[in-house]
Amino acid sequence: MAAHLSYGRVNLNILREAARKELREFLDKCAGSKAIVWDEYLTGPFGLIAQYSLLKEHEVEKMFTLKSGRLPSADVKNIIFFVRPRLELMDIIAENVFSEDKMHSARDFHILFVPRRSMLCEQRLKEQGVLASFINIDEYILDLIPYDGDLLSMEYESAFRECYLENDQTSLYHTAKGLMTLQALYGTIPQIYGKGECARHVANMMLRMKREFAGIQNQILPVFDTLLLLDRNVDLLTPLATQLTYEGLIDEIYGITNGYVKLPPEKFAQKKQGEGSKDLPTEPKKLQLNSAEELYAEIRDKNFNAVGAALSKKAKIISAAFEERHNAKTVGEIKQFVSQLPHMQAARSSLANHTSIAELIKDITTSEAFFDNLTVEQEFMTGVDTDKVNTYIEDCIAQKDPLIKILRLVCMQSVCNNGLKQKVFDYYKREILQTYGYEHMLTLNNLEKGGLLKPQSSSRNNYPTIRKTLKLWMEDANEQNPNDISYVYSGYAPLSIRLTQVLARPGWRSIEEVLKMLPGPHFEERQQLPAGLHKKRQQGENRTTLVFFLGGVSYAEIAALRFLSQMEDSGMEYIIATTKLLNGTTWIKSLMDRPESQTP
Image 1: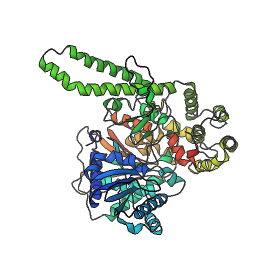
Image 2: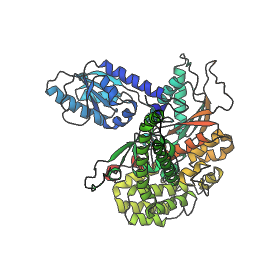
Image 3: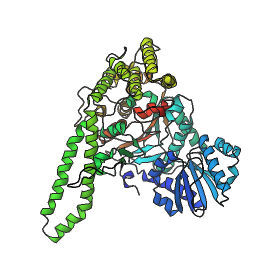
Image 4: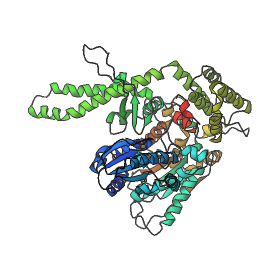
């Protein structure tokens, strides 16, 4: 049982348990001992659903990573391939199966496609002459994976690229299916709002799927009051900006993957008295980050400038708790102290870890390079000199700074200026290609297609109007005791979250003009509830909204939504769902061609 998934307004353990049950059922179909061959990309998401202990209970004895050539030897009856439906993976599987057949081992092969079966893949296996070797060909629908008590992600890396570059709506179909699964477990969501082309498609698919199941009435009392579907391209600016929350900075600097972060080990080495530091560990320190850890839940969404004070306050509380042992006189008091000891020791080790992480981050955030970069970002956000070539960007290109850093800044300038003047656009393009190589022509083309970096088409720049109307820039944002969502970027309030905030109160009708300036339609739909399932709201009871980001969401946006949930007078609690958790670097990387030749 993952306790941190059930602490919130919505018990997301129900979703995790449903996914585990399906996995067990599939494993039991393959009677006897088993080895699983994993598509490496799936191991992270699956780790959030089922630990190795669950697989072991169902006779899984070995686990291998899918790679070409022969399979490692294993004395098992069944070999199960867990793979995404990708053609290149089918060729590797065919190679594996052939090498097993040559060995004349009497084994049963099975294949489990995640999240959907694919005719094309089965056709490829047939062409390779191995389709008949498989006893079970099945699909495991892993759409929405619970990451935390208020966070779901599909971890669909290429969703933005597919929707905006390749005109491929597969991810939108998976989203609609995921939302149907969610409604089957948590009741029909009565109100749907949306903004953007993709949001419109998802809503249409959902309503069509609901009509197809018209005979089956969902008799569960609705947990969610509202669903808000938001296209990532409605707000291209937010992910490009450097996140300034604790969790956001960990992601920006080290990258959080499936709830884990890998950190430089030397900061975490346990130095013993009298020993030199000769044997420093070389393996990165891997830490799990979620709200199951009390301290992390407390500091993750704070602006980084407020984290130091929170950590030192916690240190005082912990050392005071340890001092209590001197006051324990009676057997009863000593017993009570001993019973609290494991919790206190866990809190002390958690504090040590987060103090080390905060020191690592502080080394970077206090550097001149970080400050200069942030200054330029904030100038763009406030509309300073967005229409001419920026000297800082010129200098960064001349120093051959990492290409992704350059692209993030240039895209940011373009978005804040509603496109760059043609001569500025051509200048940046020429400088980037001459410095970093002409193979990046494709990447620049992709960014243009995705709307992130483009020449100005109309002379009107709507960004200042949008900024003023939605109060996207707040001078003197309070970082220590915030009173507005703009604290997550030290002044900039994420556009996506402002739209969510206005929808709750006073409603989108008050900002019709601004909504028209943003890409894609905005709409509202209602889903009929069966009689007797209308919620009787208690006095002072909060409403629950599921906000679904199509194309990805950043940790800073999640922090801003959590802030809104905790506001005394908001009357609204937010659960967040997304196709992918991202930051500016991973997002731009997903739009690059040949990103592997790029160091981040």
